[in-house]
Length: 118
Image: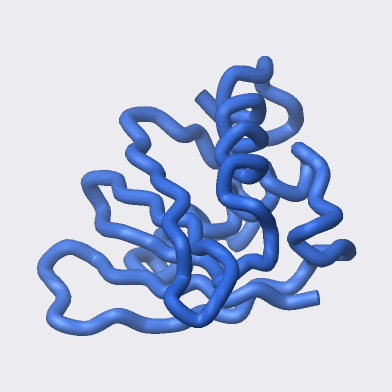
């Protein structure tokens, strides 16, 4: 299953949309591992837009990350991330906002797995 990520890089006057494959479950069935995947792929989408020649699955570490889960006017929620490089918004996701926020907090607090999230 694919999810959409809108990416805006600082200094650009436009945003682009990337379709990211790899989710096996719908948002209402997500595990913490799925949320980790979404966050990492959001950042990778930003990195690929800025640096198209980089390895598509290189290591991601989240530091100085600002994030928020917001309601989407047509239903569901979106995840918004901002870092010095720019911003990314994924969604809409059909999941309760508070549930997703709790999952993101757990993922960020967990010790690094194969992909480090701080």
